Amino acid sequence: MTTTKTYSQVWDLDVFFKGGSDSEELRTHLDAVKQQIGELESLASATQTPTSVDEAGKILHVIDEIKNTAKNLREAGAVIGCFLAANTKDKKALILQAEVGTLGARFQTAVLKIKQVVAKTEESIWKELLATEQLSQFDFILQEWREEVQLKLSEEEESLITALSVDGYQGWGQLYDQLVGDITIEMTVDGEEKKLSVGQANNLSSHADVSVRKEAFEKLEEAWETKEDFFASTLNHLAGFRLAVYEKRGWDSVLKEPLMKNRMSQETLDAMWGAISANKGPFAQYLKRKAELLGNENMNWYDLDAPVTSSTKEMSYQEGAEFILEHFGKFGPELESFSRKAFEDSWIEAEDRANKRPGGFCTGMPVSEQSRIFMTYSGSMSNVATLAHELGHAFHSYALRPVHYMNRQYAMGVAETASTFAEMIVADASVKAAETQEEKLALLEDKIQRSVAFFMNIHARFLFETRFYEERKNGVVPAARLNELMAEAQKEAYAGALDTVHPHFWASKLHFYITGTPFYNFPYTFGYLFSLSIYAKAIAEGESFEQKYMALLRDTAVMSVEDLAMKHLGEDITKEEFWAKGVALCVKDVEEFLKIASEER
Ligand SMILES: [Zn+2]
Image (tube, rainbow, N blue to C red; front, side):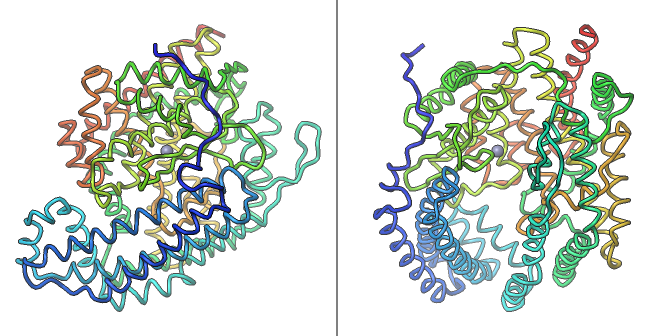
């Protein structure tokens, strides 16, 4: 082992812009970005539809201008996001964030204008352009621009829709946030009378005391029920807008947009759910066994997240970092050396202190070609897994460094590939390193919970949403019917393993109200299983696999997911067999869990 330094738990942001949200360097940078966007707007107005192949150079110039502006804007946005995450009370950062938001909207509008003009090129000239030396490397994204423009309405009509969607579509998503923010749950926790936000009440789902879990669940259901008509109207209006736009564009499937965004075919999606549906038995068995461990015959919704053991293994930050590096190293030298550098150069904000945002993320600074990782490390094994997960995201950006910035914009489904992969390495290593059976059981449970989330919970969301949108085509779907649809979807997706379900889940889950990304569900499951199959290959092939893995990551934004899997894994993901192999890996965890659980009690 190399000599180890003590790693800082506080990140270094001064390398980007000195002085935090007061930074003069950042001010100067933002002023320059503003000027650049002004220039891009002029360029957008001056850009004309190419009429000959000689214009390839002009298009390349436009692409490079978009790239430069995008990188500078992103650099500022990422650093400002870091300021706010590390100190939610940073008022100056909040103002800067709003400024970047406005600049971002102007940038998007200019880019859209360019796309529409360029994509109108006559077919034969278009083909010649894509074959030129200057543009052939952008052939995938340019083709995507063109298809998008062809599938949509005219420029005037689409811009009218965009303008109307601010109040007619996004507005409903914002109203949802307001409605939820207005709910408080009053209950006694650990002897104390408390007024909880929805988020805080949701966190009680993993409380060790069943009476607390049950009360929080029932009070939440009651709160959703009291306002169910408001939530139902919100959801119906949001869906109604989306369907009306699709109808005008002549799109008959509600999955068209989300599939396009994820560069995925319907066949692939069907094959994935098909393989999952056919292999739910072991997971239902696990839920039944867990219910028994908790003293019940069948599983209740409010017991899904309950802890099964009191085992709590802990690792200091330094130990966690060394554990990660040791196991990354077994997979491949680049992942290890990259991550070691991230620890040494203070890329990670992990300190457990007040005023930090909850959760974890990884963000990229494309001008500096660096990343930053945010989380709060308190010593649990799940913190170690999160740290590995975020390092995986950073490694994805690292792998993409040689690629043109325009060819790095990967979709949601593949976005979680590198992160899940890195998390798997560490989660598996933790199970192997467990010192007691109790500890092993808890760590296995942690892994299985992920499978249950992706194969059952997310599946229920997908089933509900697909069916709701079908019914919505014929008119408004009232709250009572939404409850029915959700209850049915949950019973089906959990393969009959649930005794009590959560009918108002459609009101409680913000993902159904996200306007930017429709069907914010199946890409999660895709990413998980896709990454599992890469992981299985890595185990089989050893260290030599790393270069192939990095080549796959470099291609994540320039081809369909089907082509990506075929080129780098030699797998046909439109077939159920591919997906079944990933599910089988998860079943192994369940088998081991059931074995230990039966030996133990
Ligand atoms: Zn992630």
